Length: 142
Length: 80
Image (cartoon, rainbow over all chains, first blue to last red; front, side, top):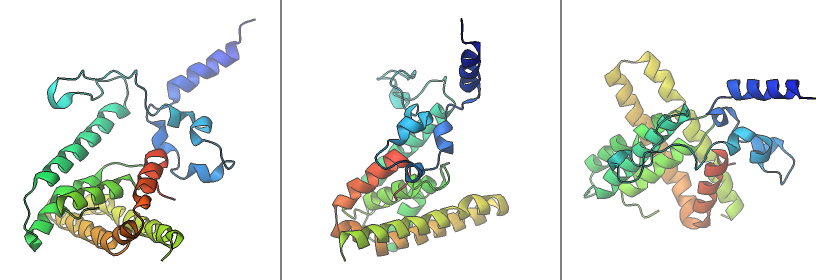
């Protein structure tokens, strides 16, 4: 006999599970699991976060290369955030600074948009990227 | 300072940065563009001051922490 209930639940799950559901999982979810267990095994949304099968712009298409082309609500935003980070880091590493306070202000103005990116509550990603950007921009050697 | 103390220092600096960051969307809703931009830059400077005083020193003393932080953030979105 066909398992209609199971098929219905699977369809409902697929219908209501957001493509970016991983954003709603606490960053410290591992603290609430049995020691040694992998959060990706328990929270399938984390395992779904990256798939090599997602449609992407092919290489050689300019700045859009490698970005998601659709089919995933989190794709374009995630791709834009990565592009923003790469653009800012490239600019930061090319700046010719002489170490005056004006240079510091310029680096802060260049990097602070990384702090403004959308992130899951409690995420440290923006701060970490911002700090990497400043370290590159100011040639701190870290 | 031993490496566990350095880890604790790093966690605290992340916590301070998170709290300062949470001000950004709050101020964005309540300030005009120029006022918000000034606040955003000043908050970024404050976040960097915390990093220079705590995070960067810890990483300088224990460079292996950098990979540890990167890996935890990549996996969990957070250093804990």
